Image 1: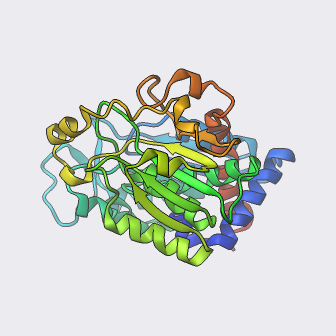
Image 2: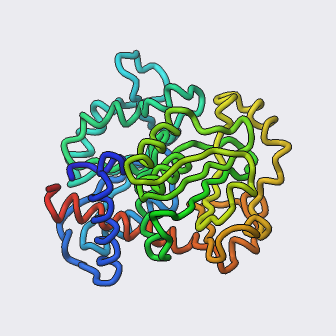
Image 3: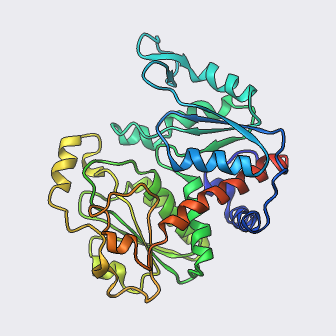
Length: 335
């Protein structure tokens, strides 16, 4: 493994190895395995869990890390061949090789622009930097992908004994006061499909996932023996569900138009996950969410703090999953 950019590029066998390695590192720590190694973390957008879990994971393996967070006084440009007369003080063509020269691996987080769907689907930042990084590159969330979260979610379901074949995974759009990126929902549904689950995307009209994302999920399902369907019928979606994974995302029908998006979601307050959602689900159905979560908006406190919730375990598994990635990239010399 040379980089960690996408579960699809890793493939199901390697993903299974990473999940197993994450479990071993959780049970039997290796506090010196990355002694002397340095992890660079470039956050072009804010972070809490990703930053903390990567730094903690690297330290638990014996390594160290540094963090770069471009802000209002120092921004990075990634578009090619344009005069840099705006806020950006440096181009990724210089910044990435320089930062990589200080580190043994480099993690980058770069959210979607949220204005042009076709542009975001093309992953413009990672497309610009991938060839510039001479050390292993880690996707800490991009425009339409979040493989670190997806790997942790896979581990969480394995830990819970959620079936792969014939397991029912519901990715549900949820209420939220503003448009959010597609990265987590796209990655979560694709992960479940890779795992061999029957995936249902539950969303209101206007919030359909892009055809390109749905095709990617469907391809993963066809290879794993899983399936994919999309609906706005909650009762149909939740029938026998083993997992409901709640996450809001932008209205793709009006992508980039904030006011039109807000108008669409204004009447969707019924899309707050509460205990009634589980009436026809599997008796051991669990609730998942990547965090942060808005209480009594995305999900009720009763569900969030109830016996079905696994959100804290998910967040903790981010650290173990990323430790497995770092171990594979650095301790195993990228083989």
